[in-house]
Every structure is written in structure tokens, then in C-alpha cells.
Image 1: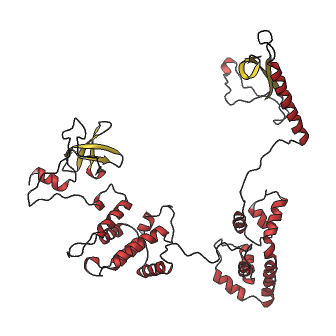
Image 2: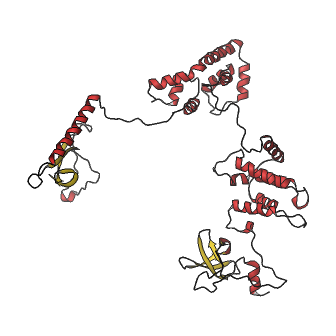
Image 3: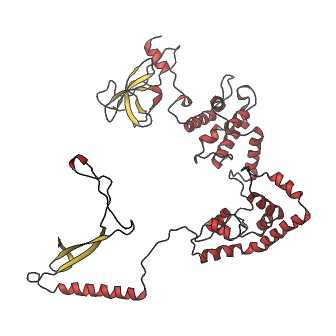
Length: 444
């Protein structure tokens, strides 16, 4: 077989092709070398020639087959030469292109599966083949991580993941469990990290929920001890009072208490002790409908400058600080802000400010009556600034041989260092004695 035949059999490109390199730069192929592994690309904009791996390039679409660029070995894209009957030109499949992203490879496998036919025994299903190859190198549930756009690990399938799973599951339902399609459901389950039983359950839930992939909404969503009597009855019980008491006691082991063990300890208590915990639960239950009012009263008394933890402490920890925070955030108009220190301005100060503003404009509008050639009015601005009389420096130079010795300052106290005042003054000469037309400023 000649070199040209080998080139056409193993390389998906030919000289003159317009390609995109690393999904970023565009150029033209001017040479293929190194046993068809590298290609020489001349970039369209910079005219730089560079050796590129064939797997880092893709054919880029062009508008027509007219001359691509001058100065190249070949300017027009033409059909490849006709090969003998015993040779074929092999192109890389979409799933074999290294430059494709995992999502693009999955899309290509699904597109190939749509046109797949099981007439030939050796013709393997593209999607099953792709899943098997990825399951060998990836951990269980790899496809769930791949399509998760939130970048957060979750044990639950997202709505997007369920939709994709059900589409592929429906594609596999009509295939026989033998031959090249044997074990199709187990391969699919491993890719998504679910069992075959769970696959059937998801399909049944999809039909029961009127073709919706969203998670089932809890019936008690948004219900707390602040707004639900049912939630208060479930929360304020004798057992919960005992659990709260045990969680606040000193323990050598910081691990979480076992719920089953706490229930067994509570059952072993005397009737008198159980009655005491029940009295606490009944007291909290009677107090429950007024918890919202207690929170509002605390916020009004402190003008909102109180932490959620302090609110829970003031309420004797009848509810957790996180429960208080969620309840307050659900209220209309809730927001967090920072306090500011504003100048105190009473009504009399406002009136004096208005009088000053009126007199200011009356005066300067009257100044326009003066002839600027004979009378010039200057607007003066004066400001004072206080500076510390002593200022320590970290870059003092000491040369004992030249008599430059260390020098320190003495003061009665660091917080009572004397200050010196400096006054700065500028004069503003108006243009034509009109303050609205600008002027020239001078340092006085």
C-alpha cells in the first residue's frame, strides 16, 4: 500500500482543510507528518505555522468552496481521491475525538443510537458500548456528576438527570436482553448510580406524577412551630424535652447522641420524671401560638440590633436560633442592614439651613449688578486641619559614627498627644462676577 493510501486510511484530515485548533484558533492544514499523528497548521490571522496533534483539531465549517487564502499549497477544497476497492478511508467517530467534551461525547452516542439497527450480529449498540467503556474507568454514578451544573455532590437525582435517565431507559426498553444488548439496564444503572429496581420505580413515578420529573413537594413545607399547630404538637413532647436536656448536659464524647438509645433511656424513667417532662412540654405548647409576638417584641425593644442566638437565649431556648432565622426570613419586608451614624438635625437647624441657602443666592445674584471692569468680587473658602505634634516613624536612620543617634519622643500618654492646627484658604475669582459662569481659583 502506498504512502498516500496509508494517509487517507488513518488521518481524518487532508491538506487544505480549514480547521479549528483547541476550540479557539482557526487555520489551514499545509502538511501532514510523523506517521499521520501531527499536522502543520498555518493560522488564518497571525500567519504563524505550528505543529499540532491531530486530536487537537476539528474540521471548521466554511461558507463555500471558493479560494480560502492565498499563499498556500492548495486553495480550494476538493473531494478526496478515489481509492482502490481494497482500501477505505477511516474517519474518527465523534466518540473517538479527544477534543470533544464529555457532554458532547454523550450527545454523539445518543444520536448514533437513534439510527442503530440490530440486523447485524456484530453491530454493537453505540450507547451501550459507550456506557460500558466509561463504566470501566469511572466510578459508579459518573454521569450524575458530569451533568450536575451546580458543582455540588448530591445523593438525589436532579430534574435534568431524571429526564436524561428516563429518555435512555425508554430507548432500552424495546431492546432484547440478549446478544449485543445483554445487560443494558445494569449498564445504565451503574452509569447513573441506581439499581434496576430503582429504574423501574422512577419510570412508574414519572407516569404517576403526570410526566413530571420534579421532586415531590412535602406536605409540611414551610410549617414551623411559629405558624403550625400540628408542628407544635409534634415538637413539644415529653420525649423531646428529655432529648433537649440530655443534649445540654456535659459529655466526654462529642459525638451525636443515639436516638434509639435516648428513647430507651426515656422509657426507663419513673412516672414522676416523665410527668415533669410532660409538664414542660405542655407549657411550651401553650406558649407556642405567641412565639411570633415574643420575637417581634424583642426586636422592637432592641431596635433590631440583636443576634439570632441572643433571641433564642432570651426565649429560654424554646426554639433553635436557626428556626428563628428561617421564620424571620420568611416574613415580608425582612432584610439585613448596617447601622449608620447620621448628623443630628432638628427642625430649627433645618430652618436655619434654608435661610442660609436663600441668603447665599440672594447675595451672589446681586453681585452680578457690579461692573466687573471696576469691581471684582472674590469668593473665599477657608478650612482648618489638625495634625498630631508628634509622629513616630519606622524608617529612622541612625549613624553613630557621624553623630546621628537614636531619638525618641516623650509624652504623658499616647492617647493625649498635642495637636497643631493649620489653616488653608483659597480665593475664587468669578467670571463677570457671575458664580454660575465659573472662574479662577488662587491660593491665599
